[in-house]
Each structure stands twice: as C-alpha cells, then as structure tokens.
Amino acid sequence: MDTWKMNDAGTLVLDRPKSEPVSLEAPVKILAGTMEKIADIKIFNVPLGAAGLGLVTVSAVDALRGLLAGVIPAATPMWLIPAAGAVLVNTRMVRDVMGDLACNAAGLILTADAIQALFNVRGIISGLVGGTHLGRSNSNLAGSLVGSPADGSVVQQAQLVMDDYYAGLQGGR
Image: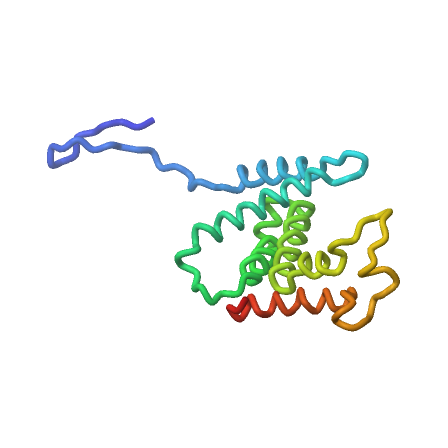
C-alpha cells in the first residue's frame, strides 16, 4: 500500500512498494482464446466466425488507410495497402492474438482486394457477362465468343473493359 513519508528535507514523499513489471502476456492469451473461439463458430459447416473476424480486420485496415490518406503519397498503387495488410495479418505476432482461422480469412479478403485493385476482375467479369440473362437469348452473345467489333462479341466487350481500365490508370476517359 502507498504511504506518505517525510524525507530529510522536510517534504512529503510518496513511498510506493516495488512492484513487478506489468506483463501483457495474460490479457493477450485471454484475447487470443476468445478470438479463436469466435473464429471457430460454424453454421452448416460454414466458418462464419472466421469470416466475421476477417471482415473486422479488413475494416480496421481500411480505417487505417483512411487515417493515413494524408500521409501516404498519392502515387501509391491502390493494391499496395491491402497487399501489405495481408502480409501483416500473417505475421506471428498477429496470429498469436487473432488465431490462425481469423488471420487466414483476413489474409484471403485482403489478397482478393489487392487483386481486384490490380486487375479490376469485377469489371472484366461484368463486361463479359453484362447484358446476359438466364432463360432469355441475347442476340449479341448467342453462340459467338469471338467475332468482329461490330457484332458485340464477348471478346470485344472484354477488350472495351480493359481499355477503360487502362485509360483510367493513365488519367484518360
């Protein structure tokens, strides 16, 4: 217990007993155990807990990206931040706290974000299947994967999407 004592100069001094250094090992183990239990939650064998923790981690990386927006140079490629996040969540220190399942889920999501930023996969796929509907024939795409630019083939649509993507990278269009 802390006590006040008078020193030789006549001033009051707080006399504290020497204590052990504070260790964060126990709280980290408790947190790791809790996160591992959350990551183990499955419904119909779908790993909802791991996916949820992965999404929370990705959201934290996105929030950090937003906070650092003024510090990170504008010329930094958009894929670099999620790629660095994927590497970070797979370090031993983070795995010890979050657990393997949550780190794997976060790493997969961040890697998918990096690939999306690098290649615009969603835009390419949308361009390939845009305008098609199940159960209805589409005269532009019916039976034609390769053709001239005038007939609206799938290959031509993919080329237009890629042209738009690269023009966006160069500041055009």
